[in-house]
Length: 82
Image (cartoon, rainbow, N blue to C red; front, side, top):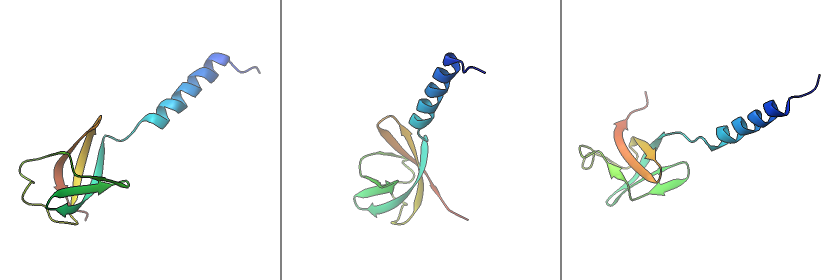
């Protein structure tokens, strides 16, 4: 049976898209609180948006949810692992 070149092309596109899809949220650790910085996946950030209710309540070692939209990062919530 011959392979369909159109199907091969579609499969190539699917593989490329799957490789480019990045998660939209991450679990990060608070590295420092003054000035505040977080780290995830080998990246340390010190410039990001943060939920205003969290700005004074975080401690080094806390886990937070980080949302990513393009080049912008937003620390949205503090989370606990149970």
